[in-house]
Image 1: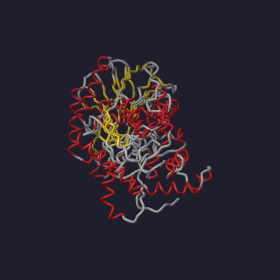
Image 2: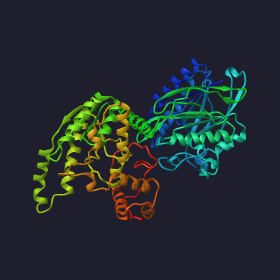
Image 3: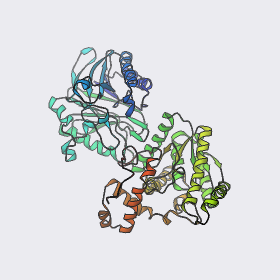
Image 4: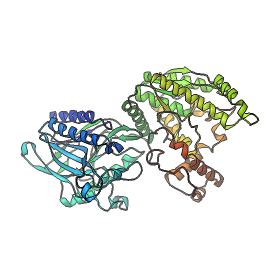
Length: 563
């Protein structure tokens, strides 16, 4: 018996378009004599639909689209589709009005509906806002075509239902373990439909967890993941299956749509080996693939065709330009140089060399005269005060205004170039370099930015990122001789402190015990706290870590530091 995985890239809210993707996959499945086709979690509406679920019209259209899809699908094929279903008991007995569900479509109709049992409410997840959890183990029987031949008892789960094995994690997060419940039912096969967002190294954890479950319950497991970028979230695909011995028998590709065909040995009730794509070789390759996909889908799904980037000749804008070029092609990227009287010759040269290497168009808009105009306008008010941060930030805001003007005039998406280290400590300017519709590397620390650029040059076997960009001291160039380390600790020290504070939740004494200067630690922690109001006003930033400054970061702005 053949089972196929359709690793799809849905667009949130595009019910008709997503249904077409499923139908196209179904038609391919029929040609290959597939009996069961699997699609990701909420494949019909895309994940996460968030407050679209508060609109009755959206839910009504989804239900109509689901019924039409059932009628359109080849009748000999069974298809599992992710969709939202109403909770008919909510009005009378309480509870949330909807279920996150998996729907079995076959022979033109809805055959069975299964509900997600574990609803995550951490990090970027807020499913308890909308959904009622399912309360029973879910399975169905799949027979051969026409009801002939052997059958399989298939257990079904949705995403988080997999993530509660107390033996693997050393604890339980929820009261029930849906996988254990399915094992007690004696299922032959377990399927999991997921929309699991990417973070660095997550696939290794997923596969270890799946392998453990397959061995523990002596049951093959198929894991089907969504792929694509949706706002700040990136879904990496990497759908995978394990036989009952815990050996991987297939793996879909990372960061792209894919199709995987599997054969089930009905005598042994086990999966036979299929196509297996290799995992990325290193974290840099993973992150690069994620960021390119995130930019590409954000541009495409938001209806843009071209992007504009401010090119400073620095490492951050160089990386963002390279990502954008890989995502949507050099003809669709415009780099704008905005030199000031403080800009060094090598910065302009480095920016132009980068643009030449990438094959992107550039335009130069000097800002010296605009700076002088601001000085004249503010002279009477600022008289008798020393030049300082306000004057420096005006330069950044001039550049931000120019970039937004280009964006407005030509309809280009402005991509901001700030990194995570800067966002963490507020080393960025509101309404200046923070301007943009997307922050491509806002979850990439400065030290990782350098690592990605070096990796990119190694892959290209040439200096795509000019060597001078990699070796010169980073600088905002807002005053003569300025370098970042005038205001910040060396990035190697800063990033380690930020990782300990943001990701590991260490206290100041713990970071000092790890060897960091207490004065520096206290200053960095204070900067992180004080910059919260800036982060709240930043454009969405692509998430690649388990603690990003995005939808999963919910810090108050007005607060007292506890550290």
